[in-house]
Length: 352
Image (tube, rainbow, N blue to C red; front, side, top):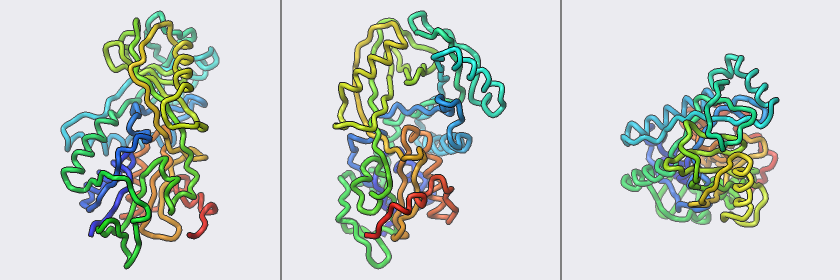
């Protein structure tokens, strides 16, 4: 018998699994390298500032502390580097936006993350109103992280590479049974696939489609930071950049689309006077929530069924923090904060 069964080895499931390793808990993790997962195509960016209203991201101080702690622990054990700090260059779209930015920089709570210092940009970058810098932004090399953890879990014989069969999961004698193995508890970290889940499909997880591109520019050389003007331009070297990401709540297919191509051309034409070649075009589904907060907690009826979902576009930065909250609840009976507890959606649940 094992302590846990984890469904999904995206960034959320991987963080849960690594914490269980450190807690000396036994587990299996099931994943089929699902092509729709946003973790697989994510650029891995994190940003401590919400640009729309110039607010600090939710619980950002705690979020970054857990990010550095958990990912730093993985780096130490694997001797590889996954965390990369980047200056984020915010191009202002108006004089009012510039003024608002400068005002915020005067507040100590924001000066930790925002700077009015301007970065010199190439002439063909359209920045008529200047720019400011976001400090403590960065990127996790998500695809390498997940690939290396996949290899580690496989070597430890705790990775099941298969499509999860909900009908095969049975509860009896206080335990969960799946394909001949017993588990004390099950944690679902399945992202946008939760709609197929017979226990947690009542949660209002909204799949949000994001499309990202790798492009090679003719003129744009490596910039000292990541450019943001309502989207990001992430330097990869040799005039090659990662561009993203679009947001689409209504879509007919989860595949890369003409909508994504039109979005790319529109955003780049507003920002750069440069020609480019598209090297790759990818799409994935982010699991979002109506209130833009993650969803964690225990099933209303089954005390040993748990869920972690709804991380949205900030999944890379939120996963270490949210996984810590969930496992403290499971292992130490520490209370889940109300704003992320699935109990806020209890009225939507109907008994099976």
